Image: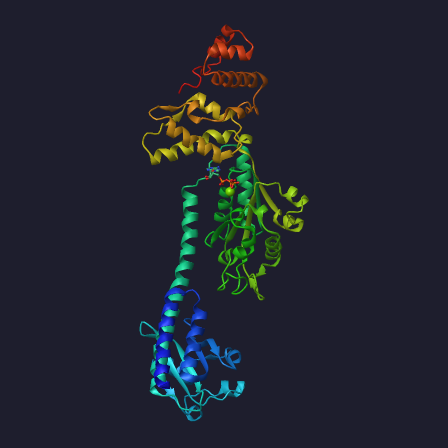
Length: 509
Ligand SMILES: Nc1ncnc2c1ncn2[C@@H]1O[C@H](COP(=O)(O)OP(=O)(O)OP(=O)(O)O)[C@@H](O)[C@H]1O
Ligand SMILES: [Mg+2]
């Protein structure tokens, strides 16, 4: 009766473990411990160990050791062939030893050191494609009995399960780190090819020069600038021009992660740190080891994450959330924000010490309106990009359209310019050139014309032109209404339209 129910329990356990293998392959150590506990319980033993072959040194180390002396045992390393586990690994054969003390293969040192006496044991190989990757053993049958063939067979089945679990975990681990590498490589390649940094303005040139100089220094970098001005592109450039270019390049948008999760995402956590922490998890800092971590929207960091970040910047170490041991990493931090960080410091939302540490090498990406020479180059760059995607895209901008681009304020900077060109490409169907109305830029910003570098006469002309066109557009191209609004004679308006070469069709397109 007892025999039958034991067999049933063994079967049920196997089914259960099988299901676990298929669902929780990332928790491999938990799963292996579970397999070993089942082995101990269902075979009836006092202790168990799982040893793995180190692929580099070819030695056996204790991955898991359960039982009273488990923790002490873990520090031992066995050579291949050494001890019973070593014999099993070399011979790729299971072994039942019922008189360990008199077996010449028994490695007695561990027992002598730890004071644990091994009477009998079963050791079976763990295999992956017929090759031995480790050894699973159960030690000292509980009731003082000997181990029997039944026990051996059951342990062999469990060992097969454990091998599958280990293989799954290794495949998964390898796959995810390869994916990470691939991803960051693909990203830096596509960045340098597709995301060419376009510039003409001497001001932009100076910023790039500064960024390139900074790239080779290994200190943190703080990139400041308005939204859409090209901070991320600059961060890419810093990584690609640094000695870390072949290492990982991980980008994190701090604003996209909920405040209460950000610390765990950046620094990882240990199992049990909070309800959902069912296993240990690496954070972005560990994944960026040897490379660059781009922290976008840095002003959004929680206080806890700020404290940890400060410590990493100071000594390169931190603790995972809920963890006690320090993790060391070699990561260069590039941070960016469009906020005024000194304001954040003053408001008490950003640590002053962290600000000073980050602001060692600040780079400021100027707003687009302060580097008007870049506008035309960027506009043509984006236009060319769209032409590669579709074949009905005009090859150029009309002079008027270019002037609109130059006189607009660009509160959304390069991103807004890119969007405006995209919109124009869609609405201008069939035209040879992109016209001002295709750009559909909001009028209320148009009065802010770029006058820098122009003399008074040219500036006045530019202003007149932009203002008159604005009013004309607002009145649907009706010159009588526009002249009224401007407070001038209709004849004077039409002369201005001719002289200044103003597009007087209004909003008809
Ligand atoms: N000099 C440039 N040459 C080519 N493309 C650029 C340039 N500057 C910006 N861009 C493009 O404009 C868009 C916005 O740039 P980016 O994402 O770097 O801005 P950002 O400063 O990080 O903006 P945000 O503060 O909103 O995150 C991107 O598509 C980027 O590729
Ligand atoms: Mg950005």
